[in-house]
Amino acid sequence: MGDITLRAIETFKNADYIAAEDTRHTLQLLNHLEIKKPLISCRAQNERSVGPKIVELLDQGHSVAYASDAGTPGISDPGAVLVDIVREAGHQVVPIPGASAFATLISVAGSGGKTLIFEGFLSPKPGRRRSRLRELMQTGDAIIIYESPYRITKLLSDIADIDSTRRIVVGRELTKLHEEITSGSAGTLRDDYANRPSIKGEFAIFISGTKNIQLSEESADN
Image (cartoon, rainbow, N blue to C red; front, side):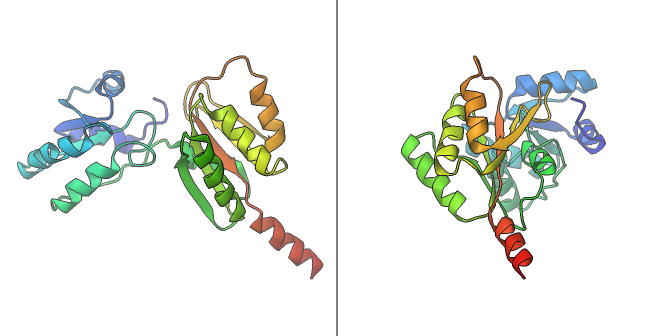
């Protein structure tokens, strides 16, 4: 709650309606801010069907704010579909900056080169996950991936199997109460998480690129 911006608070106050990924979570935030507004459930499962209803409200001259649970809408959170529906209906969409694990992790990851690939969540199927991960790491660019607590050890193991020396930064529960950031080689962090008795929270993983390392070596040779 401490990361919410003044613009976000003013947006909530001025909106006629507030659509939310989970109305229960957003209600907690609104109660904390002492804001009372009609809430509309708009999550990944019903985004396409609720979108036209929100457009109807906009057509009537009402304003609608949208809030996702624990991150900026549209970045591995619902919201992108709603944006398309609203914009295609001729209404303006205004972004309100907010807490994001993606931006937070980049700010503490260190040098990632000129190009950064944001992949979001990989496939939960082991074969597809490893295949896509290998493709991404072979680009030589820095990568950011999201993962759940149920597959984080498997993901770290996959990264280490491909390149155990690659530097990675693991962010757990970024921008939240129990935030934790660890960094080191893929092999070291694989062993760290494999030995933890329990793992909770959502994860963002930064995998360093190799292109900037190659360029540094070439510059040193010259």
